[in-house]
Length: 164
Image 1 (spheres, rainbow, N blue to C red):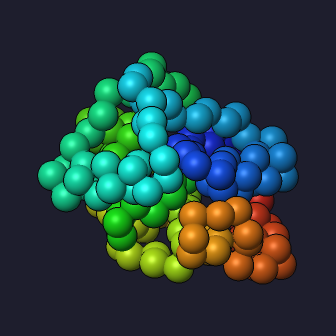
Image 2 (image 1 turned 45 degrees about the horizontal axis):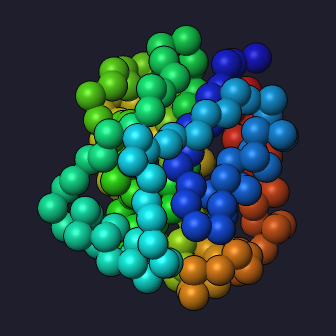
């Protein structure tokens, strides 16, 4: 069995965390949450506005020490979609790591605007093979109501399990 790691960033309602935990439970993977050194504060709308500014200028916030990916063959990378791409904290994590020879499973949560987040993850993981991409939609108001069917999520998890 191949060694798998799930790395995710989640804010607000924990939607990305929920998907990461479902995948982790089904695969027995190690799970690591990416956390920023300075937490986002304010209302949902204030953080959304801050996120837009950060995405627009390519800001990469400092993150708490992250796990070493070198011991893993497969790394599932999960992020909420922030202004059509990955959350800045995930960009920080992905940048500057050696992805050579790794298999990356990009997944993202969104409120109906998937954007180009999967392609951006793939681009940031230079040298990795990307498989089993997944977009999971929640309601468009920043809530935690799942719009993608659980059956679709389960099918994706089964595809990931087949890699192991």
